[in-house]
Length: 247
Image (cartoon, rainbow, N blue to C red; front, side):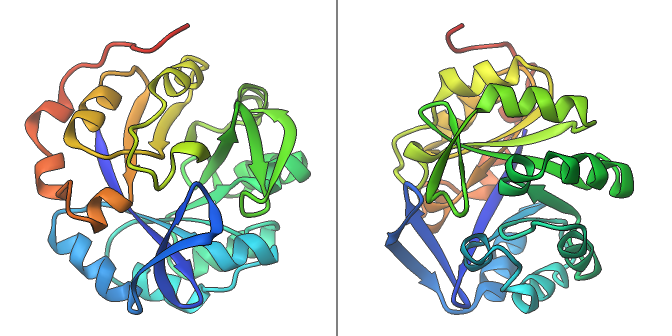
């Protein structure tokens, strides 16, 4: 299972939000590229980057910083403000390896299908940010009437093969992931990258035991030093998985 460091961008800084709340922000660095270099030297094999300003604005904002992170030579997956084919192309031209569609998949399902057809399922990833089982949109500031299960099932029909699943109420809290909900969405069938609440090595071990979970995005625990990437890439994370969590 791959451990993926999170770099959330706001006003040119590397920050973390508590439960997706823009009013509860912790700023970790004014130099996101240096943070990316740190994670690379620590053994990271991919970066998860979110343009928080873009998520609120509805269009990419931090493109120059994203390009600088892509120049580090690590695959970068990017979410936040990508609402059109032009936005997706701009991200790919900047060097982004995978594009994450969240709000766009709710507001414009045809865009999801067109994106997969045009760029391929390896490049297009569905981002599901859920609160109480329902998908949050527009930088987590609105909760839709669409359930996480429903949007994932629809995305599979569009050819999506990979989903980033975030439990917003756990994100940035260090309270452990919602293993039960993660297992529930993983049973639908796509490869799942879990996000939200990872606090300790034991959390990563539990996630690695859920069938179809191929990775975990880690933010605050890395920044606070409670988890190291080298340790997280330990041998046991590659062991065979078994499904855990409730039904």
